[in-house]
Length: 162
Image (cartoon, rainbow, N blue to C red; front, side, top):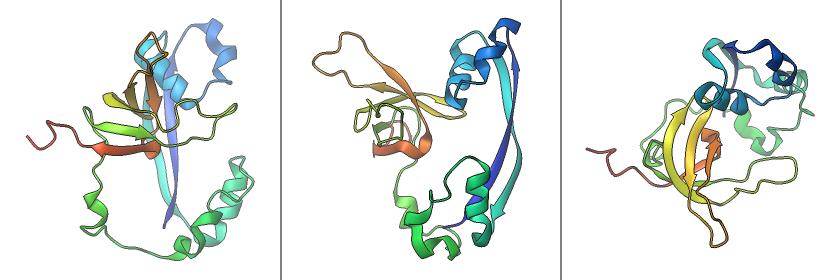
């Protein structure tokens, strides 16, 4: 597995009174505010480079991690797997209309939507909006912004092949 360092630039237009709360918002929340809320903005990838295996620990520490995030990858970090084969492309990519399951995400207080299923209804630069299947106790339909890496495609979109 090769590790890449990607830098993203986000440009926002917002009310000056929102300046204080911006520093506490996640990137997903900022994107949601851009799509549905009281902020207007755009984003761009400003840099993307492969991280050499011997500097991965230092890069992780530099972004606030304890340096162990990729430890479970083992020797895969130094392998260059080359282009994808037909076996790895057999897994369908998430797209609007696809049925998905949300994988467990690391969240303070736990991930209350882990293993929930639903349909992708809208794309977003940080992932996809998933309209969750309602549980027996829910009274309202929930839609959650989920990062692409945490989506498991169960069934591709019915219109994907058309």
